[in-house]
Image (cartoon, rainbow, N blue to C red; front, side, top):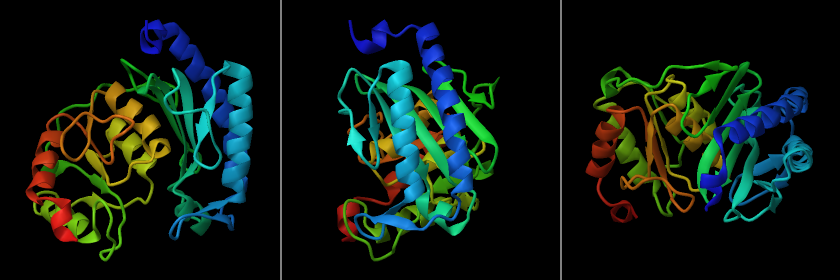
Length: 276
């Protein structure tokens, strides 16, 4: 039997309750360290603060001791993603926001069972928002169960999309991203760039956003949010329309109805390679 099959709902709920206490404790240094300076320079213009590093150490230690399940974190790695059970942690999603003083930053924690997101927690300490869910739902907002997502129209929805440099290249060039944004704007004039993928995904699950597009692939940015959106009754695929997996290179998360329309718009932009 797979790890997914062995995980009973009661066991998952207990794991999430334990993880919630650990994230509540981590929210304290998260808040006090606001506007922290860069400590570690990473690829491109990305960086980590001392608070990122400290929170990851704190949460990894607490989760491992309390649950016996290994953790894969953004800053230090750790347990392999293909383990039968593994927590996936982003200590600060939206590090640029956090360092600049913006409240749009979060702690992301997902639980993968044989690569499948089965639980997710997203804490936005500055906003007082705590989202959690296990596979099958419901999504909980500060411990209160929310109703499943409805089927809004794209025209009436707020849509989240990642920030980008128009001259960037790579898998999804900046000009391709701009084309997707332009096409979206023709149907929905309420596009937002929060600068935090995990926040966007949590807000889709909570019904704040009708949908969100991620041009990224990092598992720590997506694991928690994918679990939240699916538990809420939303749909998560890659930009080609294939179901999202840990190997996906992009993500499109949305409420029913909105997802289909957004996917049509994304596909209308054509092949990303044509924009190089």
